[in-house]
Structures are given as structure tokens and as C-alpha cells.
Length: 148
Image (tube, rainbow, N blue to C red):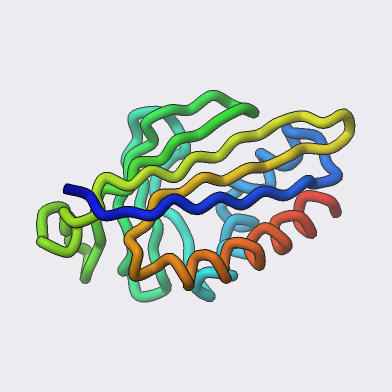
């Protein structure tokens, strides 16, 4: 049985949805806002439905996931499947199976000239405090990038 907590965060960004979307997922700009979680982090893969994507730290360790739903400018659902260690995917260790799959959903809602971005994420309880602190910082960085 999965043992996950659900956390939610949202922010209103003074930019149209298309601008936020582009800046959020551009590979170089992604590195800037995701640094709130781990300096030097990046992704490998494509933000398209059915694609496998890896979220990695500068040492190449991180998480492997699949894009399970992709509606441009509206919604993305990411299913986190396991860890990546030394280039190898871990999908079935006891640590992973205690929480996987864990979903991370991004909702984009147009509010006139602004966009509300809402994140809903399932996480292992051990990471709850860290993620509750990191997400607001990440969203502030993303807001700055999207509004410039």
C-alpha cells in the first residue's frame, strides 16, 4: 500500500498562460526556477503525453517519471515511478514501492492577463517538510521568470 501525503501550492503570475508555460518548461529556464529544490537540477526527456522524463541533480541522480496526461496550456500530470541512481532506474526497491507511483499535477488557469498555477503533489511523508518549504521558493522564482 502506498504511503503518500498530498501537498498543494498555488500562485498567481502576471503573465498569460502561454508565456508562463513556455518559461516554465524551457530547458534553460527550468534550471533557474527548479534550483529552489536542488542547485543545478535539470530534466531529460520531453514534456509530451506518454514520454518518460528524468528529473536529475548535477550528479545524474534523481527521479524517473512518465507524463500521463498532457493538455497544452491547461494541465500536466506526471507519474513519478522511482529513483535514478548512478544512471540506473530503481522502480522496485522497498523504498520506491512504498510511495510509487506518486502523481504531480500542474493546473494552469487563465485569469485575464494573469495565470493561476496550482500544483498538487503526492509525496512520501519523509519529504513533506522539505517540499513544503521548497515549493513556495520555486514558485517565486518561476513568477519572476514568467513576469520579466
